[in-house]
Length: 276
Image: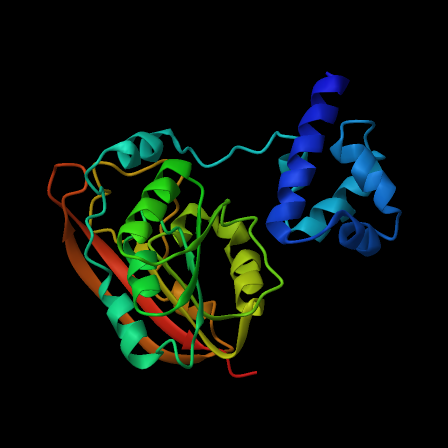
């Protein structure tokens, strides 16, 4: 059991450190210890004192359970298989908000863009073609592979990272951070702290653009509703940006056929600008 935990911790520590964008020395400096200790742990040679786990987890913006491999990860098998098909599961027409971003926040002024949950690259490729410096994050490798192939066919390139949006972090500041129907994978208790991290990754004057699925008593759950998703309440998304300038808010009911059975979703959308 101890060997399993040590091996798992070594793998998780390395992956979470890289997702955070830290070198071994930088993490060691944060924890006020030698980088040799970090190197030793990542090589599976030993395990830190249990009293250090909360500090390590805080430094990497993950949970202690995640570090030792006990945290349940987002299921990816469904989308792994769906994205392997030649046909694009989410179609190839960009989200309407992507056109709004291009029009109101052009790459000449808002060059660096981060998309959370980029999937098969529908919107990331659109942004790349139109001149943005795009970083796309998704947990499903087969979707990223398809996005890269599509980008190559369109003579553009993307920086795609296989990472859980819960754990991704970067020293870079982005002009635009966007995500379409992805934030409901965050459990309600963690949403504020995780979104605050992305707000900090946004440069002053930059914008965040998100859509979320909203829980309504008069709209049944979708036939393909996933048990690892947690719908938002009306107005909840806007409340997380109370300290930003709200440029655009909307709530609409849309028709969907993703499961092969017609159904509806209520979607809240927001565009918010960081002022200070």
